Image (tube, rainbow, N blue to C red; front, side, top):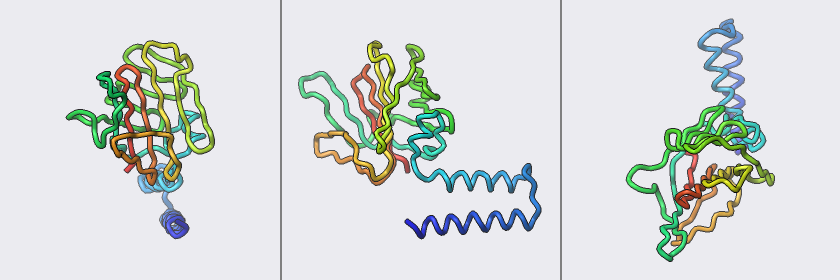
Length: 188
């Protein structure tokens, strides 16, 4: 891990020297690329404090649905499955200020969650290892919960059916009460 950070630092320093030697100004395309590279280097770990404040830059990247749990109300309870639910996998898009599930079925921005039924305030729980965002008013008809697990952190998921949720990558878990579905996304 140290060597990876060492190489990132060397890359950053090399880029800075290049900028100084070429005299690039702040408005140049090279300077813009350097800023983007610097942000990517700095944002390699999930930052729970930033996420709680509405800054999702530490979550930028590709998120893939790796497992889901659903209750079919057939007497068997909640059942876990590997991969995507249905023929079309759920999508999770993250920008620096917004998290979007399934092309706007749910949008988290700052301390607000929006779905087809309306807009709701979020309440956050940060235990130092993981962060949970839940609707502040749990008495709503439809409820949501989003939990952020940095890589290496043990999660409190209890899958059955011999399903294993790997904690070697960052995870975002979204629970939706309307269909009793819990979806696990992993950052690639």
